[in-house]
Image (cartoon, rainbow, N blue to C red; front, side, top):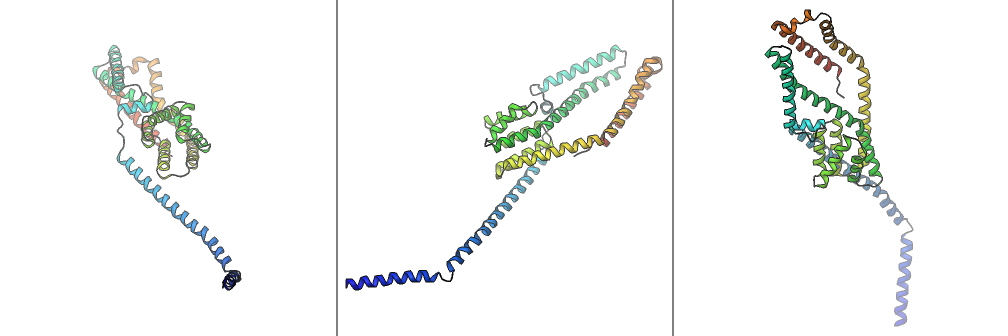
Length: 323
């Protein structure tokens, strides 16, 4: 019985081995392996395409939400915000109004000492007290934004190289804050200091955009916000943004070169009437003093200044191009 049982088991083993080797004669296992190997990349590509489409849809949704929020919540341009945009972070609105009042009072006193009428003194004090400080803030704001835009592309390149080398995003922002001059360094320093006290990156970027309302900062805010929410290659996105900013700067240079002749003509035309008036006042002061002593002369002078301002404004609109 034992011998018969061993013989039966041996026959079953040999038959199973023969069946296994004979079953592969047609190459069915190889075909199954090839089919599996062939369908796996296709499935992976399909899953990758679906993931990219979903991510692209999420990015488009976030962009629409961001644009709608920006359109609905336009920050009110107060005196404090004007001071912040011009770089006067430590100056309060009270100090600004005190300086404006002092300028207006000094102008009124100078007009009265020159024996001008009360109407002329009041108009000059109003224009210098309200117009001159605001114009100064606008000029300083534009100059600060220009300096920021000139250095901003280089700052983004530093962030890209830092991220590629393995540094976290916060450390890359700290490098920019410490290595770049004002206003780029000061704005990124404020962003890093806000992160230390619990301000999120999105909130900090919104504050940066409020202090520096340029298109470049808006692009940077959108890229960083989308990357934080949906993920992706931050270095590649910021590298593309740096290229866009350089292209914009190059286009701005071309526009400036092409409109330089028109700007020179506008400057010459705008400066001729005051220059002629000054020459006539120096050569024959009695001839032109009527404009300052008589009421009709004051009205004519005010009308001439108004029309000159309108002409300069029109010429400025004609030679300034949005890009």
